Amino acid sequence: MSHVDASASARSANVPALPDAVDARMGPRPLRLALKPTFGIVVGAALILCTIFPGQIAPASPTDQQLVQRLRPPVWMDGGTTGHLLGTDSLGRDVYSRVIYGARTTFLVALASSLIGGLGGTAFGLLAGYHGGPLDEVVRKLVDMQLAFPYLLLAISALAVAGRSVPVLVVVLALSSWPAFARIIRGEVLSLRQRQFIEGARAIGCNDWRILLAHVLPGVTASLCVVWSFDLARIVVLESSLSFLGLGVQPPTPSWGMDLSESRQFLQIAYWTVLFPGLAISLVVLAANLVGDWVRDVLDPTAKRNRLAA
Amino acid sequence: MGWFGEVGRALGHLLVVMLGTATLVFAVLRLTGDPAMMIAPPGATVDDLAAIRRELGLDRSISVQYVEFLRRLAVGDLAESFRYRRPALEIVIERAGATVQLALAAQLLAIVVAIPLGVIAAVRRDSWLDGAVTGFATLGQSLPHFWLGLMAIVVFAVYLGWLPTSGRGGWLHLVLPASTLSFYSMASLTRLMRSSVLEVLGSDYIRTARAKGLSAGRVLCKHALKNALIPVVTLAGLQLGVLLSGAVIVETVFAWPGIGRLIVEAIHTRDYPLVQAGVVLMALLFVVVNQGVDYCYRWLDPRVAEGRR
Image (cartoon, rainbow over all chains, first blue to last red; front, side):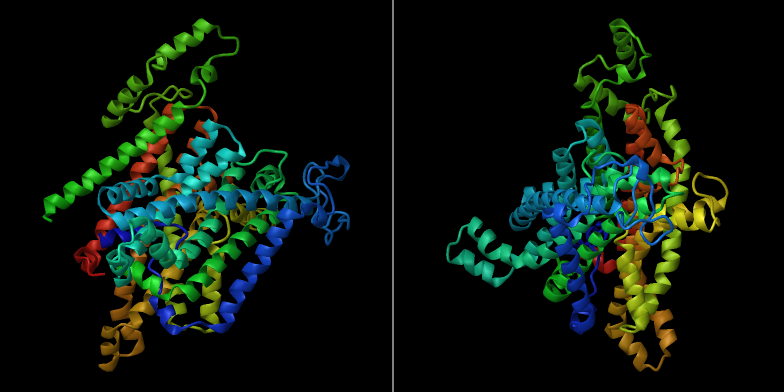
């Protein structure tokens, strides 16, 4: 069984495989550890502010079209104006304002999907790891099956079929995230359930639900935080990729991926229409990845070894 | 477990995964609108539509269509493309070359860059060099393919004019798409190589080798690298599958004529047989590569098979 876990953890795209036990032994490196959470907190705060108060931050409406002003360059280039700090797109909309309003779409969609997928995956992982047997077999087969399938293709087909709406998008994205949770939580639970405090809990007569929720679940929260941050990063990329293919959030809702896709044809004459939405996506993904790294470094030294041992 | 048991189990697993994939593809695609409407000429009558449905076998019940689909799949006959009026599998296989070329080139590039970078970072741990490599790796895992590709087009094709913007032609056409596609896997391989070398360098047998008085270079090349490469080779293999599907985006950005772009186009024109053939072939490649890598891994590192790890 162990080979399955070892190679399966290598199979996941965003959860780095075979984590470095050496780093854990070395202890924290002050500078790098401080840099990662700071960056994450700053970007996260900006994202939340833009989600709640886009109207107060953005100078213009994201959907206001001024065709006379179309494809204006950013303020530091010839022809740029202070009215449009990051220039305008092909319909004369303010790029800066669209980037700010786009944050809401990205953040809410990613949050909803990773919460749904994370809850489902964690539940499956807990049950499979704790009970073992046929349920474990089924969960493992399902995870394998999904990982054996180029998920992007399934997402594309599902969105093409079920219509391009936010609820469908959330479901498709949530479905993409449960295997990572299920697999890693299962591995953790497998080793946790051998531990004495679980045996003790069983001995004093706790029922399975109580053991799972009160004793096993707290033991996997550190890993859960790590998986969740990486998953958030992965979902933001997947969401924007689908929007880029024209299958995500539909106009007129501002979305970074869709802006990129719409502006693609003007790439050669107006690079800023593509540069800034993409930069926003990259910053958010980078922040989530760094926070994941950081949480793992700080909280997870033992869990890392467990994942190898599971 | 005997050798036959192992092979039997692997084949069984392969079969289950393929059946699941095929069912999923079938279910997802048949839930969509009416393909007869898509291929019928404008102004077609109800009778015309019925005739098209009959011809394509769409008038039969879903379960009959499903069984028929599986039967044909088993013998490698995946129906005709609605649009091209040719066997779908043939078209997909024609395009497969471009995708495989792109994925292999990308992975080769990733490996060639990642291994030295990871080794340097591990050997010079905590130096500025390590910081730079780790930073690059984190960045590489965070930049989305499509944006990276578009920016690469702006810089290298539009402003510098060194490389063509899109399409498939000489090897120059391969440079931008392959580099774009390789970036993510380059980053994760670099990270893994670094941590793997660090782990091996901390192990007992390396201490012994050092104690024997071997030079640092000899310890690294003769003893450490071989073992450090095991997880990296595994991940590199497993990533091939991910690269094949990641190619959908990169192929769209660079107008690369591969399976990914074919599938996206086929979805927009509701060309079911073509989508089915494309997705099933990709899934097959993916599963075969993953299983193969899994077995190579156990062969390379017998500890894994014995369950001691």
